[in-house]
Length: 395
Image (cartoon, rainbow, N blue to C red; front, side, top):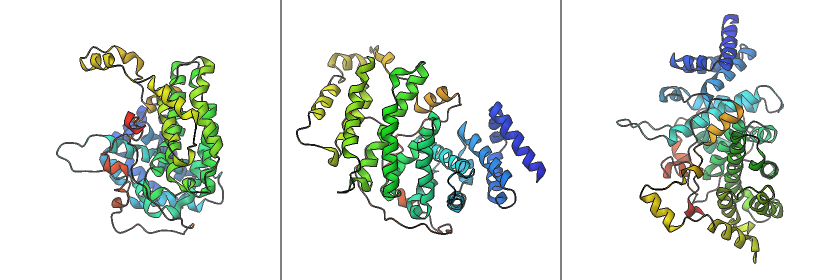
């Protein structure tokens, strides 16, 4: 046991110094072995168990896993992680919470990468996002995970970690079976966190191009999460419209405040703000702000000459389009190696309800494949399209 503990510590610290060590571990098939050790070592050696969790997280963070690796992560393993969090629910500052949650977040990132990747010819393998699948089926039993997710977002300052949390939140708020996974009070806290962070983010004040791109990408992602949060959860019910006026003022400021720093208006921000303003309980009769937003968006509409040039291959506007993905931005700002870009999704067209539940005890792995529980979500219908698409027709 001492030898295993020492080996895990050396591999973890060596990999954090030189990420090639993590790549070599994966090439040698160490991922499945680490998953097996995590299953077995919880009661034998808590210190070793935490080291193995961190090692698994770091390996999954810096590279795309293989399909065979992800198949090792079955329902039982994911439920085991959720159950560990429930067992530690009495202490939100327990050092185990963060490593376990980070493992879940990076696994969700890996599932999103495979969902967005084109299918390999000659293979019928489909990767089910087991995080979303099990929360869809048994979410009320594992709400401590959601509570800690919001707590971490409230405390987190690293760009890459915020993006990982926001990606999972987006999936939860755009999958009908998890619309009401969170308690209403937790949603109130999340709205407060989103409002605060959106007001604090200002892409025009970054000292470096990478920092400005990171601030801009994070602002876009918060807005993309805010829209389904306000539209699909219990906040949309009459009487539950939490901080309606504050949200309306926030949306107005996001479009107009940039002029204070002489920065150009961000087209994506305008589009996302308009999308939020279309939520029924945020509308207001005779609102001049809506007309102003529509006018600003019209300023970005391409001219016919520009479209013709682009169709003829003569467009010189590429310099105005960022070539950086969200994860690449996070990598440059935090000096971390990027993972594969997140998938993207279209606007949702269906609504659904999930019933609230109470905290529960342990749960056995369901004997049947529950992937159908999320098959009605937009991931399945849209063929893995990225959830952060900004198509003009969505406005």
